[in-house]
Image (cartoon, rainbow, N blue to C red; front, side):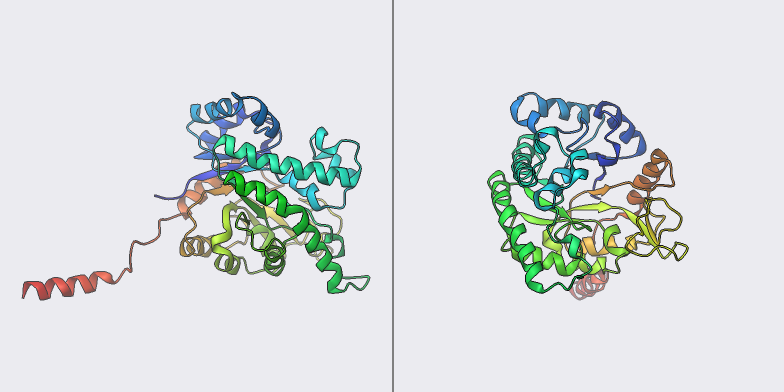
Length: 341
């Protein structure tokens, strides 16, 4: 049967789950990818309160929804990042602590490990998220940046994330990195390097999101075909590029999302430039059977309108792969004719 259409709740964390769940059902969703912020999924509460997971499931079930993944992007961001004042706004107080950068990174790693344990308790097999990066600030390679500088960044990622991934393995849960600017992997080449840094750890894979690849000029269909078995979750998010006024380029010009000068911006699914038809074909070809999870972001559109049309778009778009070659019928007809002769 076609894949479930789910909604990632990260952009809806201002609503309690008890309000969002019935709204999501009305908007046409089969389930939710629960963010580990707001009140949607609390990692520590899931571990210490025996009734917490059941209560969250009860809200979903009451509204005819399922959950296939939880997302802890905000905590994951702090595992490898160069910590600054911005992180305090996105981290739980017990992870931020006194703000000492190395302390924040270590507490974030512990919280991400706990997220694997909480996912197991909740009964899901995938945690989506970020990694952060100690070398993102060097993206332009000036001052002149030798490969040894970037090697050190990937080594740092490997040292910090391998113990986390070992916990994921113990819990039989996968970590799906959303390949994304500011993370250790943001395109195909850096994704290859990230896999090598964790020695191809079987629990490290990707939350495929074409929007972060398209405007960079990265072949997002090739990404699917290259990393197919490593795609543990798929975000449906659209983007357009080449639409600004010529004053702001790919790096964003320190403008905010929604600024008309921007060369690229996120769009409601189906209203941007991502080739979703080819995307679905490629996901079918690599055998991806997980949900299509809408991460709705469009600064110019009412979110209920946008998320509703996105669910309908994805449902029309998706289709089951063929059970066999379309022209196999001719061989069967020939064999039938021979049998009857």
